[in-house]
Every structure is written in structure tokens, then in C-alpha cells.
Length: 416
Image 1: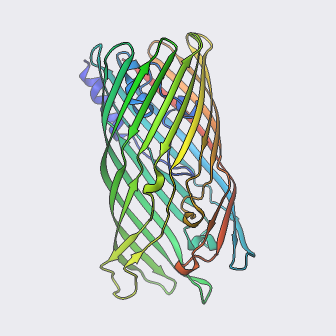
Image 2 (image 1 turned 180 degrees about the vertical axis):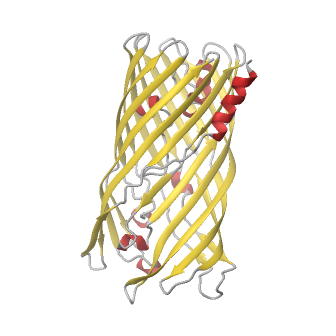
């Protein structure tokens, strides 16, 4: 083993800049090839990003491989707000706040039966922003969740049919929420609040593949739920001037999920993948924040509670890969992602409905290097949700519509 290359791979996976964002919560854009195939990429040959998509498939990697991926996501959307009588009181759009999903991967074949891999990539992230003078800002005018998972993985190939993997997950989240405080009697914003904190927590994953024959294979991946105890700083900026600070604390549980995939090779050039993902979003039942030690006693509430009550949901994807030659390949994909957000749990933090993603891509590879590019367009759909005037929202209901996200991705892989 080349120890210098191993050290470089670990450093790339652990220290790569991780800035992730999209108009959504779950991130599936872990490589350009994965983007091109709609996320249905559980059985790729010689791809270090298998660490993310399907750890059991790192047994398909020969030798020692490093990979980096950069995906640009640009969200766009419109909304309308309605008052208690159902009359429209405001229409607007989000502030385009693009983000990056960055993935870094390293895989090394130890022997004919054992593999080691490590990845650093975002599983959950989002960013949304709205005009600070809008009525939507009383719910949220800036929301950001930066997330990254570091996943050291061990995989074993039992025979020609079976392979399996198990790994740990070190998950980081950085959360920032900003909103305006609204006075319902005066019908005006009376100040702005900011909650900002970060947390580390542990999880795990397991995966298995079974090949029926040379053309058909199935796989399953389980990722555990991860509970974050978030310690944060709370700041309030009253309209009269000054600043009030407090300590904030909250618990956020990122959901567990199951991936089930099927791979069919029509011939040596063309293959098709199907993938279904079950995510248990019901773990996101509330976003409750406790406040303590305020700098001005008696001014702030002890709790800021917000019920979410999301439901569990499915994501379905289909991906096609065709080799034009030994060096060039083209890919295409489609994904359908159910909305898990109920009417009484929607907000301007994550204002997304069901999502349809259309994507294409191309790849070049030689014996040492692989370069891939992909383009995607995500139709985010519409979402209707209630406001909560009793908790400070300046509207009774909201309608998010004509929302979409542009996606551009590039990956580079090198074999040693």
C-alpha cells in the first residue's frame, strides 16, 4: 500500500470544504454520475462514490481510488400569502441563494475479499432566503442547515454473489435561523431574531448486495437515525435598538432510511438501475428551542416551539447508463420524491412540495482518470401550508408555487 496516497485520500475526505445547500432537506447529489442517473447509482463499477450510494458496492472497486465531486444547486420559487379572510395580502419570491454539495471519497482494496472506504458528503442540508421586509419574514427570512457525514466503511465479498458492508457515520450539522418578530396588534415587525449553533453526533449504516447472475443484481442500504442535541446562541435585535442574547438548546433527529435497488445489464454497454428510498421523516415532529440565561431578564419566552409532524415518504429513481466506447459514456435519469410536509407543519424554512428531477450526463475515462459532468432540473412543485398568527406569523396561509432548482455537477476520479 502507498501510505502517502492513503494519507492524501483521508485528508481529502475529511478536510474538503463542505458547503451544502438546496431548496430541500435531503441531499442525494453525491457525484456527477449520481446526479446524471437521478440518484439511482447503487451498482457502479470502479466508482469511489459507492461509499455514499451503496457501501456494499465498494467491492466493485479495483485497487486504490480517490474521487471529488462538486454540485451546484440554484433554487427559485414564488409564493402568495393570505390573511384570515382568505384575501391575498402579499406575493413574492425567494432570494436566489445558491449552494454547493461537495463530496470526497477514498476506496482501497485490501485483498480479494476485503475493502476499506471513507467518504465525506452531505446527507441533509438546505438554504432558503426571503426579503427581510416581507410578511414571509415573520416566519423565516434566512434558514440554513449545513451538514456533512464522514463515513469510514468496511466491506467484505463473500463469494461471486454476496457482498456486504458496515460503517460508522460521524455527522455534523450547523444550523442558522433568522426571522422577524411580528406584533399582531400594531401589524408591524418589532425586531429580528437569530438562532445559530452546531452539533456532532454518531450514526451507522449497513448494506448488502446479491447478484442473481451476470446481468441482475439487487441491493439494500440502511442508514440509522441520528439525534443532535444542539447548543446555540440566540440573539434578538429590537426595533428600538440594542441586542438581547440568550442560550438556546434544541433536539433535532435526522431520520433513518432504507434504499432498495435493482440493477440490470442488457449487455456489456447498457445497464438500467431502479431505486426506491424510504425516509422516516416522522422523526421531524417539532422544532422546539429552549431559551435560558437572557441578558435582559423577563423579556424573552422560555420556549419557542413549532410543531412539524412530517410524514414518512418515498423517493423513486430510474437511471440509465450507456457506454459509447471504452472511454465515453452517457447517462440519464429521473426521480420522483414525495412531499412529507403536512399543511399544518409547513413553513418558509423548507417550502418544498413533491419533487421531480430530470437529468443527463456524460463521462470520460481512461486507465487512470475519470471525468464526469451532469445537468439536472428539479421541479419542486407547489406547497400549501398554514400560518400561525398566534405564534407571530403575519399571514394565515401560504401558497408556494413555480419552484424549481437548477443543478450542475462535475466529478473527478483518479486511480493509483
